[in-house]
Amino acid sequence: MIKLVDVSKHFGSHEALKHVNLEVPTGQKLVIIGPSGSGKSTLIRCINMLEKPSSGQVIVDGVDLTALRAPVAKVRQQVAMVFQQFNLYPHKTVLENITLAPIVVCGVSRDEATESAYKYLDRVGLREKADKYPAQLSGGQQQRVAIARALNMHPKIMLFDEPTSALDPEMIQEVLEVIIDLAHGGITMVVVTHEMGFAKEAADRVIFLDDGLILEDGTPEHFFENPQHDRTKLFLSKILR
Image 1 (cartoon, one colour):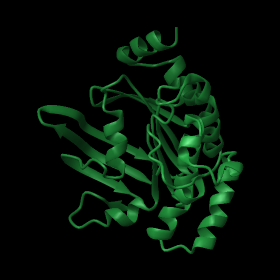
Image 2 (cartoon, one colour):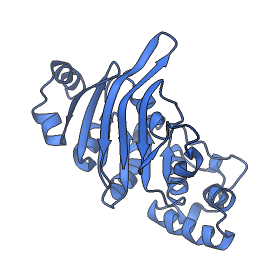
Image 3 (cartoon, one colour):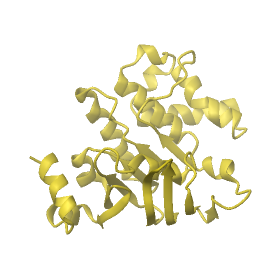
Image 4 (cartoon, helix red, strand yellow):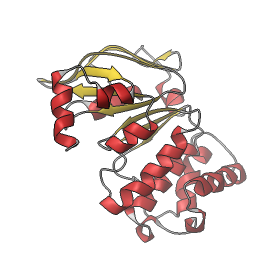
């Protein structure tokens, strides 16, 4: 479903990604872990071309997004992304936030978009908040609305870029529970996170990124119980105390 071939990304003289090769099969739940500044967010943003690689290929659902005149906008409709910040429209209700993109981008009827919006609000436990505005919700609730909004595009792939990093500690679990529920379905997911418990519970596969390089790649059991790279062992020793 996702394939990165020799992907590098430069920001001026800084090399954020260094010849990264990665394949994510359909339905896999991949968690990306690493220290701040390791290139995690850059990598996930390259998947849907929010960041254009300096070199290499990004292939999503069989389409090379780095090719000349690639249908990036069309592919993005199948690749939903949930950011650190919720990015909800403050002047629109929860329901309006969730239905806007299907109606405007995909040409879905308002009735159809609304029906599916309520389905996903049920899934994230927020049906009763449909007529509220973002400012009337907690941070955790806003992020759950952002997830429902992403789901209402009926994507093949869900990307999460540190979805709990902007939340107060007591709100983190409610968002993680929603993502874990999604992980039990068949959708392909790539999640950048510092939440080790989530990685253990929901991931099929964990990669460790440091200084723009994938240093470790394996199952959660391998990653947490038998990491091979010294840098991975050092990282885990600091965060799993």
